[in-house]
Length: 148
Ligand code: HEC
Figure 1: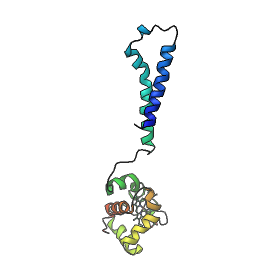
Figure 2: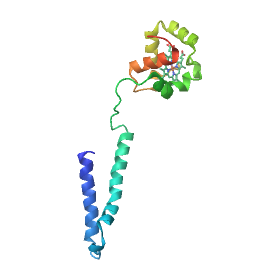
Figure 3: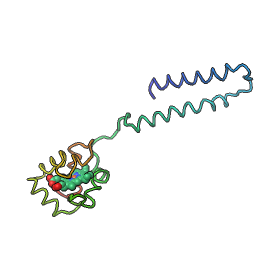
Figure 4: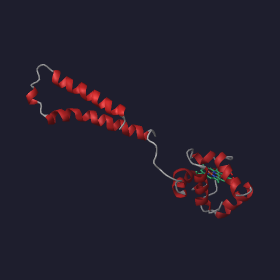
């Protein structure tokens, strides 16, 4: 939790408490600690919700280390076209189609750069814009059986 967020909670909590205690007709003895913390609880919730929003927006850096697996990348990004052969994409595990594509491209490294830059109906990086070149290569190996 950042300093700002903590300061915000103190601020909002302080406002809340002063509202409760400043109420002239309130019988302070009847307000138990439990009731006060109950009233403050939604403030804590706001903070948690804020933190969830922050991580959902990608503000909190992912703690992943090293490249994702070919399987994970394929299933998230490539399967949409390479699973069914959509738009003429070489299908997963269709060794003949992949070997033909590699031959046409002029080798694995050209095939890889075509995938990174995009070629005809194949979008750049297969829409995995945060994929490293290495991850694209791993995903190609996974679905084609080709070796770099
Ligand atoms: C929107 C559909 C689509 C997605 C998503 C997609 N591809 Fe493709 N891909 C294609 C199509 C279509 C081709 C065939 C292009 C052609 O030869 O005309 C292709 C071809 C390729 C080729 C061969 C390139 C060549 O030189 O012939 C590679 C390698 C490849 N894709 C990798 C990937 C990877 C890796 C992913 C996922 C990270 C991915 N693709 C996601 C549509 C897609």
